[in-house]
Image (cartoon, rainbow, N blue to C red; front, top):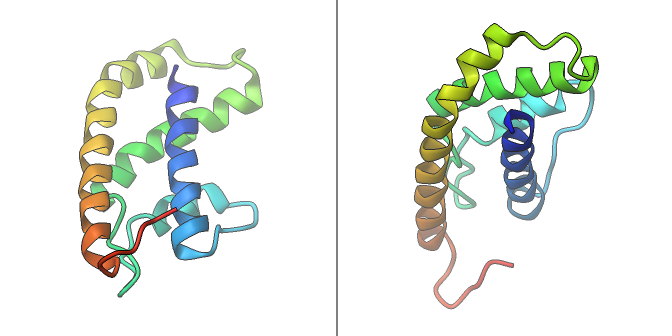
Length: 117
C-alpha cells in the first residue's frame, strides 16, 4: 500500500514534468530531483505542484519505496511501517489538496481557450 501510494504520486509528478516542464530528471537521484522540481514554480509555465512541506512528507514515502524495492520486504521495519501507515491518509489528503490547487493555478496560466492534453 505504501509502495503503491508513492508510485501513484511519482506518476503524477512524471506526467507534469514531461508534459508541462518538458524535462524529467535523469541519473541516479532522479526520484529526489523530481520531487524537488515539483516544488518549484516555472514562470509563465506553471505554479508549484506541491509545497516544500509536502515534499518533505512525500520524501518519507520515497525512502520507504526505495527500501521496499531493494530488500524485497525482508528488511522492512515493522516500526517504520507503523509510523508511515497512520500518516498515509493525511499525506494523501495534503497531496490531493495541493494538486487541486495546482490545477486551478494552471487554468490561470493557460491562455483562454487552450486545453491541456
